Length: 570
Image (cartoon, rainbow, N blue to C red; front, side, top):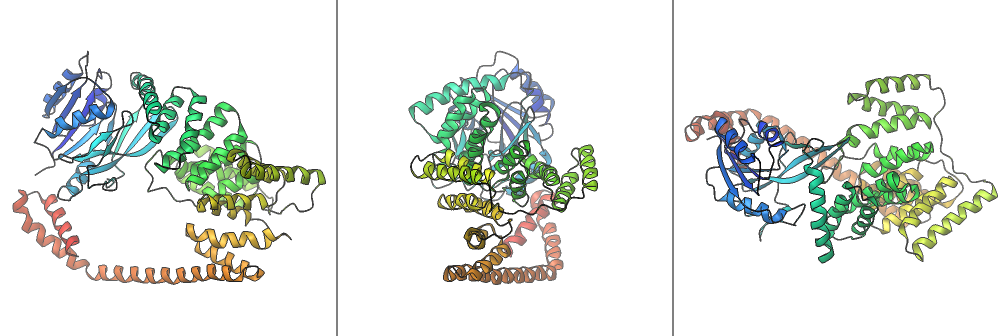
């Protein structure tokens, strides 16, 4: 029996954008269920007519909008009272369903499995910006989950279930919105959201409401108010960590674009980088220092973005553009000016493969062809002018006072980075790495220590030992095992803390053995799978034919069931 997919929407006066959504549902759904909260136009008639033309069952409930969670729950209660469908897809008007065929295949895959609520990718375009995140929009008919929060509502599980019970469906399925073409609905919603969220924040002070009020204020152009709210949310450790990350990241954006305060922007970007091991804040810093034409510092940050993994476990506002293209573009440009030719050409190759800006890359490659300078070697500035050393020392003291006496993290971070800008020695970097360690941000400690390890060895203990000791600790936690092992060996040679450095070294030796065993086990599994390949094919072929009568001749469904049987059998 084919999958019966219903769509549920809460609507009011949506005659202009409704056809855009309905167009993407043609041939996809069996039911359209709406909760109309007071339309004065022909919204209901458009739905009725479309359902008649597309042989789709139409159910409509009329009522009054209360708030987003209450009203969506009214829609869910109504939808669950309707019996003749299997899965429910919840849409906003202006959503366009991309990958509908794959969506049906995913529903079929989960039809006989226990999961009831599924995460889907949503993508919003607004101006030049594209926001991408995951949201629970697909459910089975009787799932029991209900919405919470008056604005930016979310599906919450009933007792006995948890938010982890939400598999992600295929990346090919996307709910897309073009918010530049929405009949002014977005700006009106922002104004409504601001009132509702302001009341919630004043009465309850929930961290989630603070974050979304900050976001709403920013969208309304109230940047000073947004900044204060983002700072308030970022300073709350409890709650959803991705909100903290974006609070500091958005704070940095406001500082650079609206406050025109570069030092405060740098501090917030660094705080975001300490909250989560992601490309966006480091790429932001690389761009800022590129703009300032401090090419080596721009290089340090852009280099750090090159091997960062895509944040597959994150769900909130992931900038695909930064991961797929922008980090390579920026690194290819920055490396030219440092210069670091080989690295720059590798980054240029990766940027070119995306197909973006071909003329720009052609021009940049021509510049590299003419580049005949040797690669820059990073040396610490040991013998400096006394006045420069004095200013540097004052910045270090300023940083120490900010963190120990004033408890001013922004000033501490900005002062440390300014000390490094004034004098290229690695001590401020190692101070920053140690602070991040104490803040339990080991991946960021690794990033900063990795910069320190780029410098040639000098006479200081920081250069001869501390950076290698740090790297021996931090590299393990970002799976840079070879780099960490080599750092431990260098630290051991100095003999400052042989016991600790040997213990760290042996952790890498142990991990090497574990990885070799894992690789060996994987090869065994691959070999066994290869040996069982014909058996698997024969099993699926036989069971497909046996299952066919029970699924009314649907060969595709019969094969899926046979494949599932094989997995369960194994």
